[in-house]
Length: 422
Image (cartoon, rainbow, N blue to C red; front, top):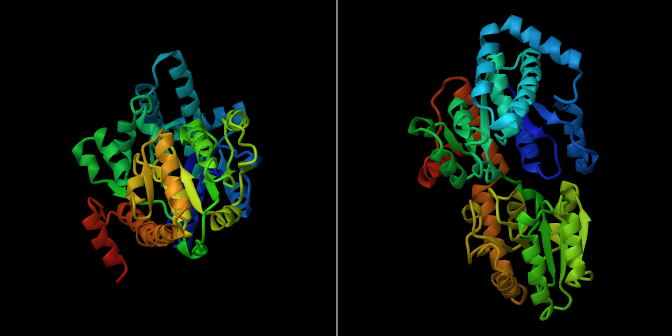
């Protein structure tokens, strides 16, 4: 099986779940060609995995004007019917206003590059992660080059402006839709006719539990860990405010922040304003190996985000037996069971966040119990090998017109897993 994978920027330090999915499919014999609209910046090359993927990825941009014109003229003469249909589709799915027309021209131009590259490599299917701008390029390229496409539906940001990105049109045209959670699937169902729902498959992001050793919890905890983008929407200001409260009881408490992002300066200034310089350590982007090391040496993992799909970093923490504190939003409750493998608090609530962290810091037995339960949950439902196996079966079935495997409920998912594991 040969397919292409495409997203706006690949590989990024923050999108390791896509890289792992690609690796897992390759391990199952799928020849995955990775495409990206933009070339990844050096700040994202934090390990050998990112470097090797960047070296083998095809980048749409930059491209010379002459090459762009030659590419589009070639497609127009080779596939005139599909080229004109793609042009019509681009016009009907443009965003409002003059700026919408200009952006759509760029997407249409990029789609031609993708369509040509698909023909050069003799590929007939492309899979898109995140159906926003790169999803538009994917849809137009598929029409222009006369091949099929599919998408992975993560959320949550695409659900904030589905009309802007014509999500319904993309989902209706997709050969199948891979949804990372029941929540994501339900949101996709909001924007599509009922007959599209059967093409929506739940394929979780996953991790390899064997890479993580269970953390041993003893005594009063003093280490907190956050891994992710440095963005206010991740709830980091709330976490910093909660530290002010927590430091009164736990003066030795330290928060390690792994990652980078647009709000780094804002957050560093906030640390100074709250006089938390001795309690917060910013360490920037780190390799996957280094992230695992940080997880293995923490007491509690905290992710107080306002908008998520199902964060892979929570899976990693749970795989290591680290109790997690996160927010009761989107699909997080499909991973974290409140009071069993972690605590889920209302987003934006400093008091609830500090209280949950306090409860875990003072009780090593509870941290251990949550850690064991978290590891079990990841092994059962968010194991990368199992999810890759399911995704491979979906790809095989839809690309060869075999009987589709559709997950409509947890009961049916269990039956599928049971059949696959026999």
